[in-house]
Image 1 (cartoon, helix red, strand yellow):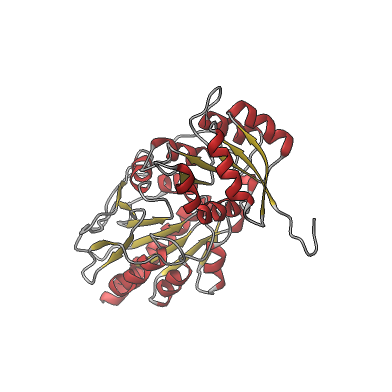
Image 2: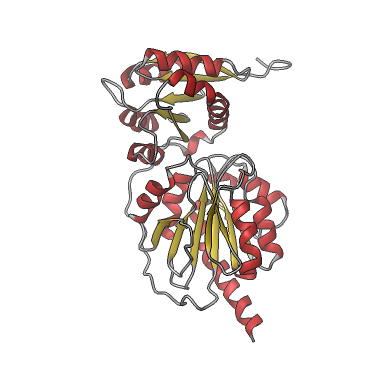
Length: 361
């Protein structure tokens, strides 16, 4: 339907619990922009319904009979790529299943609440609706899970010590980010002496497991941010989910519970804004796939401070929101598809190093 009545996003709800299916359906149907077109109780049934109904989005449980959610997701992404939001009691506090689901191509994850699911899910109704509508906007052609390939490992040959003014790269990502980071992080290197800080929008409790997962595909040192931490060449620090990661005037890391910005915490803008007065022209800001505009203001400040701003090209974004907002500020130096972001970072690192050396003379 068109004209005065916008087309509703068609959703398939998959859960082995009758109660959970009913509550999820009621929440989604309460939105004027969503229509639940079917409900399935297991993966086998869901695959058949997905093929027949062609939904815009699927909400998917993990623990189900006959064919569980992860196996169903794997097959779906191979045969019929569709945006999926994982909605399961197993997607809580860093469950490995959540990270595996994101790796397989799920757009986002949301934890079912403990205790009374009806009360909890209704309290999270706004979040669930927003998540499904965001998933409906993804680039479906990018969802199909690629064949596994060995991680690209580069020699870690530190060219800087803690006392040197080494470059610092701050990477912002959201929807589609975990899969993008699994491509980008193995391609990053410390050959030039550089540290990285990643701000990925995730539910609280998910950043630690994702950091540990990424640590397995790189020789760099990937860890979750912690109060009083500091950056060293070769570090990849992952902003702790549910908190902002900021720098003090000495460059030390603080993890704060300050209010969300743009509806998210951690926020890349909060991190970048705190970093600019401390590191200035040593900064490189990178904005990857995601909905909204987090990172746009921060990369603009980085550029104004003499640093370099990079944004992912629309062609490789699952959701082209955050990169577009950054580009629209006019401050982005380089726009590149995901597979070329690492090379753009290398070039920016050398540019920053030359700028720092000239200033030191």
